[in-house]
Image 1 (spheres, rainbow, N blue to C red):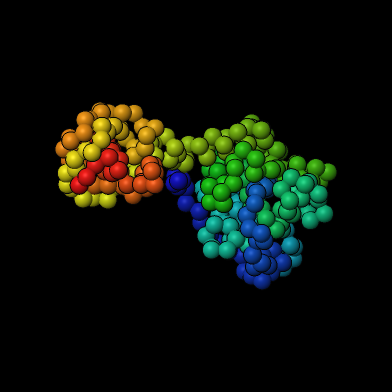
Image 2 (tube, rainbow, N blue to C red; image 1 turned 135 degrees about the horizontal axis):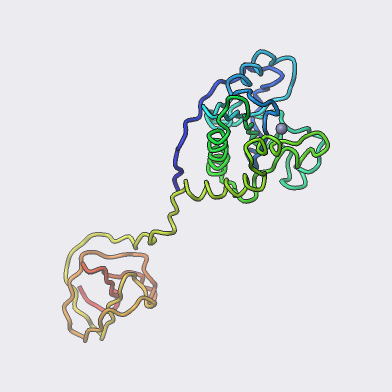
Length: 271
Ligand SMILES: [Zn+2]
């Protein structure tokens, strides 16, 4: 499965080790995502990361990504390094993350901050925010319909994000969750809409003579495939190859393939 890379993810890592960036790898890896907003209308992704860096040893609060209308900026490794690192974006004492996901957010969740308000184009920032949440689901094999939680939900007495930031651009948290699922579906190439790959035919041309009345099967080397034609004993059939892992009939799973996409069982012919 592929994912459409609509946007670039820029990186400007905080200095480590510092209070904001420990450098510790996430453990047990990325299991869910926490949606935040900056709570500070008009503050940009770049401005927030600069402030994080300037104050890196003053506070341990951090997040992985800031998203505004201009860019998606990663300041604690989430995607662009081989090992995602921990960031400090939800208090450890909060129980809901453990209850929902079996882990503390700081150990197992990517924190994504929505930048809004002021001179930021909220609609464009929102598009990038939705996309990067969907992309994180793709990268870490998460179900977009149940792997994202808002900070307010985990820490309801202290936090309102990203509800308040989204409201700034006339959107709701519920809409965000729906839009991420929609974006995920739009950006993924769904293999299942294409027919599954056919059986692997080993090329070898030749002729076979039927020793029994034999069914020629359409599409796949097994007796559940539709019968293309039934031929009498003694019929000469051309083949272009064979498969070794067709349906096993009387212990024999070799079937010959003709050049029309049909198959016949090798046990019914002599070559
Ligand atoms: Zn937050």
